[in-house]
Length: 231
Image (cartoon, rainbow, N blue to C red; front, side, top):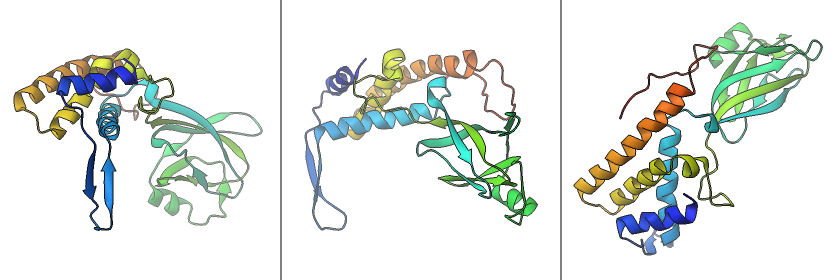
């Protein structure tokens, strides 16, 4: 199901064209327009984010390389980073790849209070939403590899109007969007319950794929692996 089909299907199921609306902003300084397209796009984005955070799938993973520089204990994270699966560094002399252990900031600051204490990094912590802190401070320039969770491009923004969810599990995307739309319109409870049932059925199949078939063997026990569950 591509974006155009999804867009029209949502309006057809809900029997609502979601006409453009205008209201005064909270500061009372002007008006805000919320077009029909913006409304439906919001429902779709909300559904996608709910799905992204409810199941683990390879399509929600990304790998990037970076650089740890001599004397700099901080490492920037990508702008679309949401959570870390693993962080590794590559020794510039031996080319050996080492995976760093995740700790908290207080641990690294306690173990390496002097930023001039340098060595091969062994630990990392999430310093803020844009930066990791390494311990000890790198004593050389290292290449880094980050394997992380992110939100894929929304079907709303895709140039070809397609996404992995739309192509592979359009039922989950459709009924997730319908739930958002029907709650917005204050629809009947029995219809919402029907949409919820269809959404849950689709999510059960998606969970079986993402948390069952795709996660049979993991080297690191700290990587999340949930029992397959039925909604």
